[in-house]
Image (cartoon, rainbow, N blue to C red; front, side, top):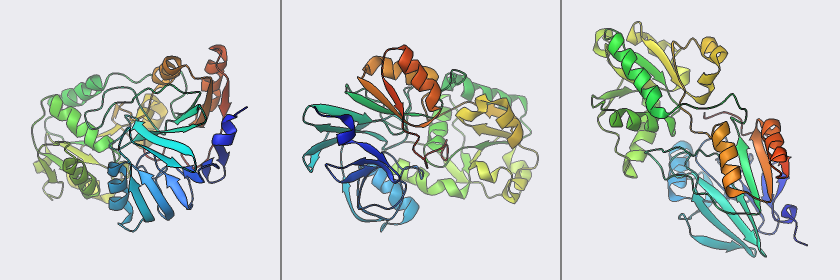
Length: 335
């Protein structure tokens, strides 16, 4: 009898495939790694060989330098390679540009490792592709019923209404540099915001990378003017860490906003001094997590990280065996 743990098993370095001798999203340097996406808690430098989508490899090159691994191999969505008798393919995860689920097959057993994912539409990347499998290995970053993200359009509408209400103030929006920044820009463009968007310098390289892969972001400009009045009525994007830095003083009295799924928790918004919380997440919320499992209906669910206990309990009640892997090193860094 073929057991799932013969194909994939948790190790201190991450999820390991002993038959193919490779790790998926290892948290420390290994000889061979398959990477789901470019966020730093999943994609690290120093591996001997890395396989990922072309977009993820490009993101890693921008973040770590072109010599981030001994060798690299780009794998297109739907393309299959065989490693040590194990078939490996990538399908879209809908998380950020280049994000992928890893599908591994061996002797009739199929396991799908979701990486980070979401189910709602994202204008910057292909949507999540459900894949039937025997074992679904899922994240659970927002694996509690309290996390039900509102429609993105509602949150962007909230931002635009605040801009109209306070035209004398700039709106300084905290966004993570990979994925969230570009998604918020595209959502603003779709909502009719056609003005140049000032951006912090830390966002520029990844904005350019997205544009290079065909994601149209519209007019952007460096947020470098020393004149506070130049930013009245503007929407400025910056990494969350910049909101409380000396860099932010050039904007006078901006409305501080932060785009994150964690803004559902009011205490987190207060702790950060966020005046305008925007609940925009690149992770699946509770309904998306449970809906995905119900749709795929795997024989078993493994949960890599996040709020494992609640999701495992939901699976048990749904008659699906579930196991919390409690992998370390993947928590919240890029949400």
